[in-house]
View 1: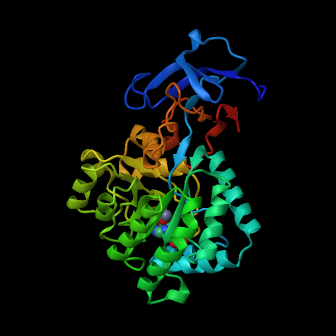
View 2: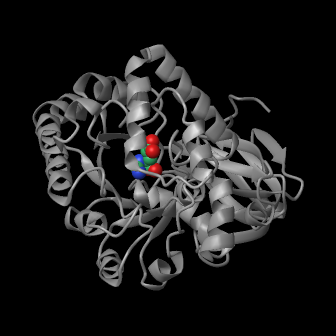
View 3: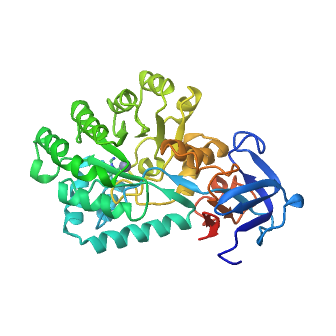
Length: 392
Ligand SMILES: N=CN[C@@H](CCC(=O)O)C(=O)O
Ligand SMILES: [Zn+2]
């Protein structure tokens, strides 16, 4: 199939997930025996395979499933080194503590720009192979102006969804002086980095930053044109969810330990709850209460949260399998959360669905239905990935 074809028809699709209820059944807008046509990088036509219009290039899916590409709304790809020993110790009973982040700060500061960029490229390629076509990338392993600045600059070479994680954990030179670190971040780091980012993020958690410190960081980001998102309620109950709602954050991520007031606040807000079950898996944490959030009407996204500490996977299919098996989400809820949910968390309307006019970002599975993503855990089912209508 030519890469320069203007129109491409994908025919003989066994199950097509559109995420447009107007195009098919249920919230996933599922159609059987379907076809889809991409034109100039966007979705131009969806219908029955037998009715597919002529196109410059054709692709027979042989009954396989086609879905929107996954929208990964939470990843920490700018780092050096790894922490396999820390993981092994956890599996022998050690508890995860935010302080482990400092090991990666040290390695990241010591790495060259080229090494950091090569690591981002490697992980993005891995992520693409498991079906992610839009990926948010956070900084957060620099924690000083020089290293946060180069982190967001490197991230911005690869994605428009760059997050300045200005306050991840106080770095070693600010040990016991988190307030002073926040003052530095507000006065110096955020103004320097903001032109290279879209989002501002903070780790509001015991062992990281308090409510007041986190609020100050988010406010400084907003003052420099960034949109807030929050890491919160990962390791215990805390103020992260409420802060996210107060700030009108796009998402609050982790949301593992919440009370009814947190759920109610989220339900009455536009803040997405982004659940990261891979992190709970790799830290032997409890899983988030997805059913309670969904029952309250909260918008739920799923992210893979690739990072060297809590979760060294880029695989959203793996997270979908956990969400279904252990968090009791239905396969349809989990697939929606990893596609349309991720798009909501990034405030994007052009990705996360295959409605007419959406970006032609799609994946084909080596399976007849999206159900197999949970039914066949650990199997590399993503066979083809189209980005902007072109086979990647
Ligand atoms: N929770 C904070 N940040 C990362 C973990 C970072 C690390 O341990 O290196 C997360 O999303 O899980
Ligand atoms: Zn994170």
